[in-house]
Length: 328
Image (tube, rainbow, N blue to C red; front, top):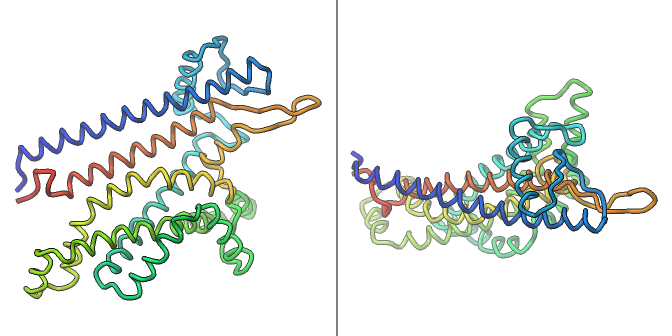
């Protein structure tokens, strides 16, 4: 049975996790808002280009400008406008789908490979140990270009233009869930492959350390099935793995932004890319800047990080026996 005191302690710990991450989220948005607002004010005051605003303001102070970003983001969430012919909410949905698919495959395959490598060793251990330091030094966009050449140009297995694939299916009446999954296959494969081996290597190290523990040797001596021993090892190593996943999530988000641009996925990364850049203004060129869109995309990505941190740290409290309140 569960101890009431332990449940209260865990509830308090979860509340502290949520409060801490909300504070981090708010402070991070203030910093980002300050940077974006500084760019907007410099462009306007020095006439460096065109600033596109959904909600024009007459105020020109830094604090008023940042406050306008928060207000615009709230309005965007309640009533999403269109950006280049697409509702703003579709950008969020596409990034969320890409992120969820990546996380699911990354966690499942990473845990499987790491558990097998750490427990059985052998050739899987050698592969994981070699690929982890090698691929961790390569950015996801570079792996994306390699996969584009291999799976599209050479093997013709997957499409490389997400929006083009979806639009073609809509025109020909063949759009279905499988169309979306096939169009997302190569971007997801790229993101998973670029981070998979580092995840597996960390799990492998945790399993190797735990495998030589007295409790594991005792279970082996008792003749427990390997599957049961591996499940116990996984439960022991999982809390530390969740901590690693929490802090590595930003790397996945950064990689996702670039992958969206490479494979033409109109998600949050694509939205950020089109929110600033050089454009023709009159007879010359200037800087086109959409600060509210840039802040919105950043805010939603930080919200993704907040949700991931709360979920992962909450699972850590539940799985780690040292947190108290475990089942007796």
